Length: 91
Image (cartoon, rainbow, N blue to C red; front, side, top):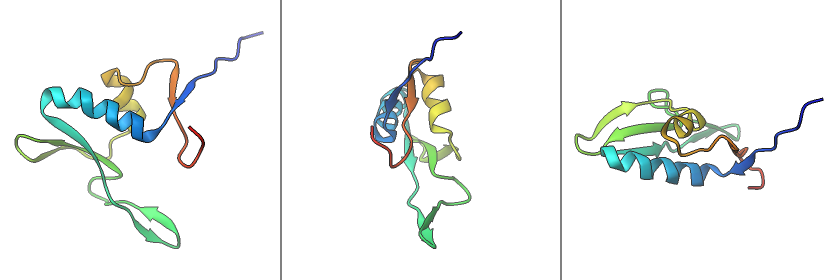
């Protein structure tokens, strides 16, 4: 019988802020695309996706279609006991 491990939910806004603090050390920033809506559902730019990384010194796209949770874990902005909260959910 295993223990149920509960993770602390962290809002998207908080994760983006944490990631941006880490990326500032290497002159980069994480940006969020503005969606356009079709039938009430958001769609994001095909070239960069919802989140993308920009080199602030060269004004250059570093990475498009960024997985927010994966990048947060890679940079240490999300701890093992934390999870990205679902959009629209309580956090």
